[in-house]
Image 1 (cartoon, protein in one colour):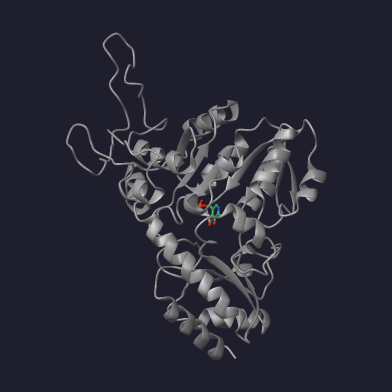
Image 2 (cartoon, rainbow, N blue to C red):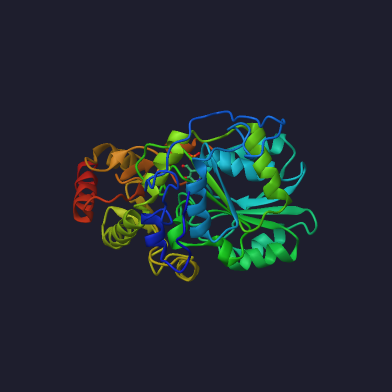
Length: 385
Ligand code: PLP
């Protein structure tokens, strides 16, 4: 296998060509899918190929992981069977009893995992507003805080955390920083170059982009003891991606720059239009100049502020639910980052202990024509009256 395009080429070119992938044995431009679960031992009982069993690794992952390493400027990458498997592997890579800091408002299933499994398993978790560095500083227990987990922009209020400043603070206290960069994508933000130690993606979202693969990824700045542990968590816990899905993921990634660019432009435009709309009480989007965190987002996001926004409706919860019920183009479904636009009443899915306001709709902006997306929302507002 050869993948020669280095960072002297743009991320767009590296993505489109999967780093210039050429199969050494066939000259194929698309990587093969390796389905073998097991590998032949040498006659003298060695495993010189380095491969034994595909719960540890699968050669189908390599071209995908190399593209991710290149985009995120990391030294190693691991694919997982889901974003949750990738995220929880980071926490499982910490010594039992570690103190960790995580955002008060974050991807709800990971928050739930930290509150349940994480705490049962001995993690001490402090939830703080990570857009406020003084709140983080107050929560750090010097010598005991092992990890600060960030998600930026964070679901579903899109709060922004200052990766560079928080990484400096964390490292001063001997803690690591991991960033769920799913919404920012590797194109808009590179957390490792801002000082973070690990980056996580739900590859289910923008990386794959077509709502047909569940996958996760981690990329590390260096191969440290926590990373070695994370690799063991994947190998022994077995949350491995199917080789077919790994191959399909790479196919999706090759057009990510086009999809993300379109989604960002449409989301920015929709946010501005919706701000003028009498039915909308508030638009939450990091690209709006009056959004708290806009200045930090402008500093650490290049080329757009992402394809995700939320709106709060003047008519409250019922109006939000009715609006989602009346859209034609926007699909009423959970998830994000696909080519089709999705609308979701977030509080309904997150349950009673959610910090999300009940009048909020989360919008994942796809790549349809933006004027048609706006028109659909406007007719849904009118029909929900
Ligand atoms: N992180 C974020 C920001 C997400 O939106 C999601 C899924 O919605 C996840 C992590 C979990 O990813 P997965 O569904 O691939 O397990």
